[in-house]
Image (cartoon, rainbow, N blue to C red; front, side, top):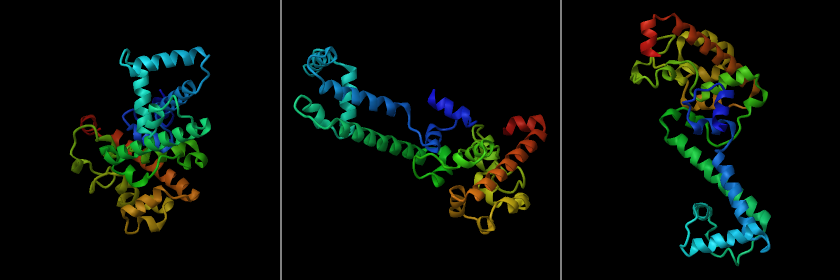
Length: 267
């Protein structure tokens, strides 16, 4: 539900990889909150007053579990999660080990966050859809352009970064079309990918000069591509979002002007 909400509010396709969406908004899967709450609740039970019904029930369940009389799926999960976080000693010696509650909460949250962030970044590195995204995204953090760009402009930039803008490599990605046939809508000379339309396409040069600094499109390379999309200069980001909006609109117009047979085979 959380992921679906993020995709809808950012106007992204439902097929957009989860790792890209969560990394762009600096969020973590719901499973992170579930594990964090479960482990903190478990620690309260372990260190709770023996007179409390919940503590009595837990200790009864724990004894049945360790003696293989009843296998509790909940305790199996707690044990596995503690081991993953390096807290196996707390599980094995839970009746004798006492640590500061605040320390436990903060350490569990920090280690869980590190684990989930690492998992998202690994998915970005291995996912075929994230070829360009892995060049510009190095950590799981909320992108600052959401804070100052007009919402419509922020959406254009977000869609470009996450491979949702209306360019050939995006439209044809899921239609078994060879990449070498995904020609640019404007020049038809090169593959119409993000790098080409942003910095290279000669048919867009007159517009590019209005919104992109000359440094970026002069002898363009991957490093300049990365620097432009990660720039902290607000003016550069704002102009970039306008340029991307123009590209998106022009590409959609070209697509709509094509004959129906051509559209159905390429889109």
